[in-house]
Image 1 (cartoon, protein in one colour):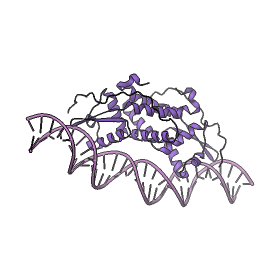
Image 2 (image 1 turned 180 degrees about the vertical axis):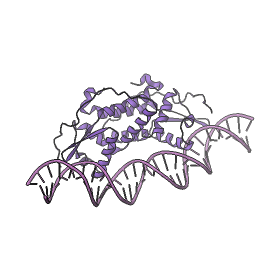
Image 3 (image 1 turned 90 degrees about the vertical axis):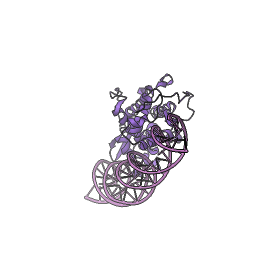
Image 4 (image 1 turned 60 degrees about the vertical axis):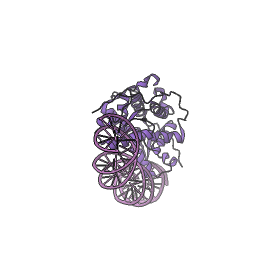
Length: 124
Length: 124
DNA sequence: CTGGTTCATCGTTTTCTTACGATGACATGG
DNA sequence: CCATGTCATCGTAAGAAAACGATGAACCAG
């Protein structure tokens, strides 16, 4: 019941390349952790909402999901701890937004499973 | 204690494009399900093993993981039900291999979260 | 047919996850 | 200062997931 002005939070596109390895035990754990954070429909929907809205929003997310506020807050926490989103306090509200860097990282990690595979001829 | 000959199972590279949508409720659920299947370190390691070995293997996977055979079998089941791997019976053994098509699909779904976002300028 | 190998499934325990309402922290408008 | 709106956290109950050993099905070798 608000549709607040999407503040100019969540800055710094930060397109530095990611240094971390794409294979090995650490990469495996990283991929598992990121996937786990994505592994719930509500959290995917939250990411989708944040991706759609050009800029970041606050708890309008709650209005878009058939879940209690506390549940949504919990999901946001999971996503934030995984580094997939960022939250910034804006007065009484909190403004969430995507962290595209992490999503790109996830994409790269998954692609890494494909490139080491034999079918890389049709891979891209 | 075996290192059996990796049979020529798991054929059909099958590079048809995927028809299904990249957004919407179905895509969200699909992405969540695939991510959930990936959301465990042991399962990521299994995929990594299958990706490394050029061809498919059997329960040599069990020898590579610090888990009981039944536990590995359970993880394989999860991966198979998600469509990420394929299993083919080869005599008394079962030969597993990657399903690159599904991994590519997952990559596309994640990329879809990025493309609808504003930062697509630095997206690729 | 018999015994051995390979793997899936069953049954169980333990732990994690999800969901909710209730409560609390915090900033802002009056 | 007080009331209100916004959000996080706590406590809890229900359900899912993870791990294991034990058992069973299927296949070969002899």
